[in-house]
Image (cartoon, rainbow, N blue to C red; front, side, top):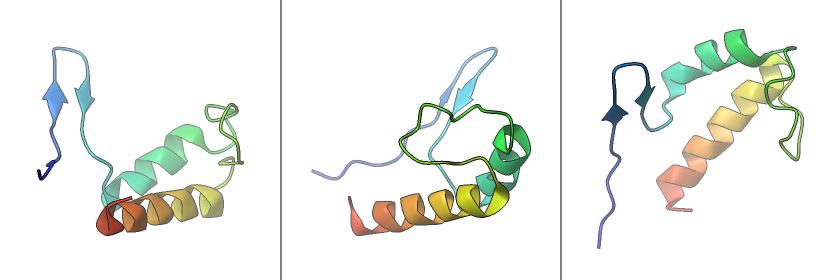
Length: 64
């Protein structure tokens, strides 16, 4: 069974699969703001967030 990405969109929220172009927005929204404070690793700066996005996309490509 192949599972494909799904986008869910409502009146106020849109949820979609992570893509490389989301990194800029995640950096702008989260860097230094403590939004990801409950993650088991730090995402408080731009290199950490970009590394997280890159790693997540690599895992997606591998199917993990």
